[in-house]
Length: 217
Image (cartoon, rainbow, N blue to C red; front, side, top):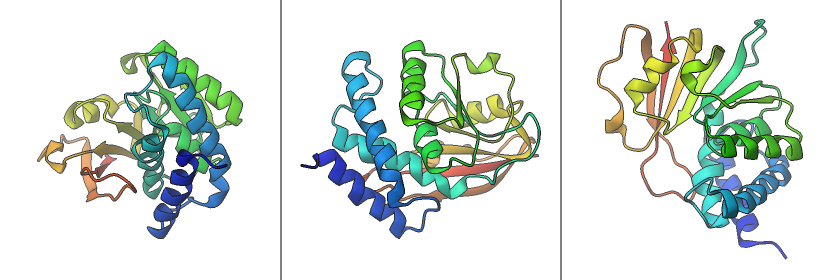
C-alpha cells in the first residue's frame, strides 16, 4: 500500500508538470521517494529539518527544490567550472532533488554542518548521484566557481549576493529563493544586473514564494 507521502509526491509532481517546469517527469519518482524516505529516517535522529511529517516534506522541500529547474543552466564545457553551486544546502535542498532531475549537470553542495553533510553523502551514495560533490566547509573558505549559484534561505539576499561575487562565474547567474518579495534589496551592487524577480507557485504551499535571478557582470 502506498504511503500518504508517496501519494502526495505523485500528485505534486503532476502539478509541477502542469506548470511546464522543465526536466520534471514521472521517471523521477523512484529516486525522489527514496530521498524522502532517507530524509525522514535521518531527521528523526539528527534533526536535519524542522519539518517532521514526510507529507509536508514533499511540498516544502522536494517541490520547492524542483521548481528551480526553471532556471537551471545548460552543461558547461569550461574546465574547472561547475554548473550549479548550492550554498548552505542543509539536508541537500535544493541540490539533491535538482541533481536527481538533472544528471547532465555537475553540482557542488556547500554546507558547514557535519551531520548534514554526512546525511548528504549517504543520500548521494544510496541514490547513486555521481554528479554531486559535497564540501563540508564554511562558504568563506570555498574557492570554487559555478555558472549558477543558488541558495534557499541561507542569509539575507544582499549579503548572499556579496558572498557570491567570487563564487559565480562572469556572466553566470545567482538565483535566490525568497518568501516575501520585499526581502529583495531595491538596488544592487555594480557586480550584478537583476534579470528576473517572479512569484512561483509551489504545489501544496500557500505561503508566498519568489525567485530572484541576477546576472554576474
